[in-house]
Image 1 (cartoon, rainbow, N blue to C red):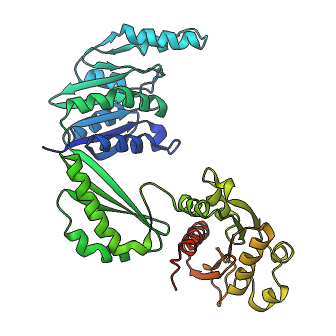
Image 2 (image 1 turned 135 degrees about the vertical axis):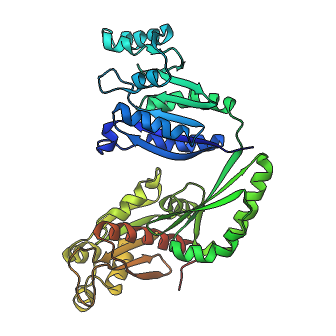
Image 3 (image 1 turned 90 degrees about the vertical axis):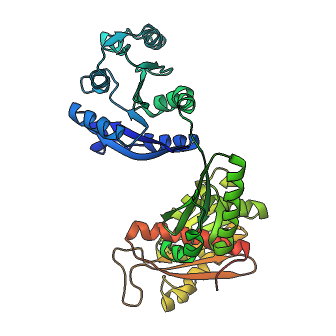
Length: 419
């Protein structure tokens, strides 16, 4: 069985100008993959006839399914329907069911139907209309030379409803597609290059129907195993066998399986132990607390934070010894240790976590250059400190520090802290 391929074409100057972000393509790619349809290319073009036609001509040479979004509104710069009418050598005709939908929408809004909106119910005679249950612009489905062309609105919630209700089920019927299954492994604390070297012998010997993808993030790599086949149960077994081998090779760096974030894992670990946590932040300025509290239900374990950016706050609010500050400086193991231990006592929590460093772009010294950062984890039994030397610019320095701090919490709670 051959692979069914797709290309997504987004139409609109607003995408190319950066006025909006194309979220449609990512969602469509995910849903197509579930059907066993592989997206080969995503193309964005301007609101110009020649550009749209050229994109269509190119796409049909390499894809079985061409999905288009955008350009279906009632204004003059919405050209998609006109272009498709000419492209498929047909003519516009009134589609009464679409007109009834448009009329109903305007009636519910208590707005008089304009002629421009009435024109949206005129569709190419050669297409199969795709009902838009929540908008005024119907979609269009064309078939030619064994290929499928579908045009949908660029409004995300309208496109998603069309895809879910009509387009995806119809594609499943039209094409005989293989089964595609993904397994995701989340790693942290290991660079992509090191990970690739570790996995190279295993990856080389993967069976031909299973592929590995590396998706790096700020402090680790998201690994995706993709299996393709006709028998879902056998494919699942094959993937699990490879997943077990992968786990044996890199288990210290795996924090989760599936689509789950590090901050979510930390929350689960705290909840499982009925632990609470507080943060004392200097260089991260509250970003670590933000990551922890971005998880729904974090009020069960997160008690509060002190953003001790100035040394006076470290002394007054966190009871850091002024002599410690004078002798070692704010960016030091000694100070961050006191911050973590004292914020835990201040809030009466099981865990305290602290950060202090030079985020940049200035403020560094020869002894403590930009990117010198200390973090500390403290609980009733121990305090663990870690020195970071990471300088990729201020914002990335802050984000990286927060991710390493989250991982230190995870490692401390699971007893896997690296010596």
